[in-house]
Length: 309
Ligand SMILES: Nc1nc(=O)c2c([nH]1)NC[C@@H]1CN(c3ccc(C(=O)N[C@@H](CCC(=O)O)C(=O)O)cc3)C=[N+]21
Image (cartoon, rainbow, N blue to C red; front, side):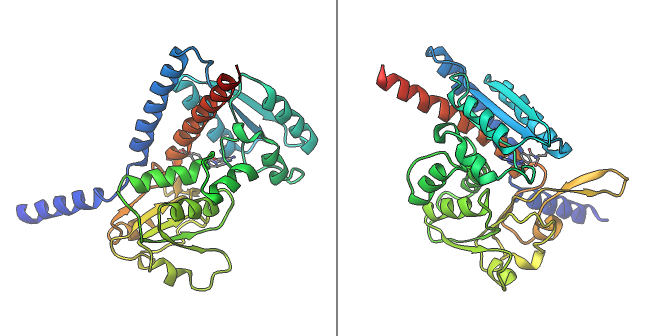
């Protein structure tokens, strides 16, 4: 290779790398900010914010996430309460625990890790969490507030996606945003947040017939389906911003495993204007937003207590 072409190669490589949204770095900055805000909150004479994480069963992937959450919670100076329940836990036993956590003044945020075993209805459980402690924002009160455009607790993953979008878009007004996936956890709240940013929003889901054609119209494409590699290079409008929420563990060549998203990253990178990687994209933002939501919940409790005393 001539020196000139190797220089061109390096330039092209740097240009492609600059399209990758650094979720890990943005999450670290948010986590550091939450840490400083926790310190200031405590300096003002308030209690340490506390987060309770409840895990039912022993899914190894879930255990990793839950432990990761506890480590990050300590890093920002909050208290972490872990509740590991057996797979056989009944819905009533879980509801009893939530009732205790709801009235525990040391706890400001409650997160019940999903999915839950089949004998437990996730809708009943999420709605049993006191709305002001629902740091996942998945209960009907916070979901309703979001859909009405009223301030409330916003689900962590969509909130993290919005922050990543804001890192590359000053204003999203009039942009066509396409969300693939319509779950209560990601797709639906994501669509609400994009509407609030004045986007024209299309939601594609499992029954949508022309998902690829819709995706090709998107200025902003958010993919949350859990189908690894679903979105190929030719699904992407040149210059679009692509947010990949999917995270699937697949076998790697070396006999180990690796994490991949719902977007075929290598195909998408040369076409997209901006794109999130997996890992290092949305995942770290989800945890940073959980800590952010827990501090907001602690501040809101303090405001209520302060107002009544
Ligand atoms: N009630 C509830 N709320 C949740 O927010 C929730 C949940 N249940 N159940 C499971 C999913 C999954 N989830 C992730 C969080 C962080 C990473 C994360 O940090 N991922 C790293 C990689 C981690 C690794 O190496 O395994 C990354 O993408 O860079 C991934 C996934 C939250 N979830």
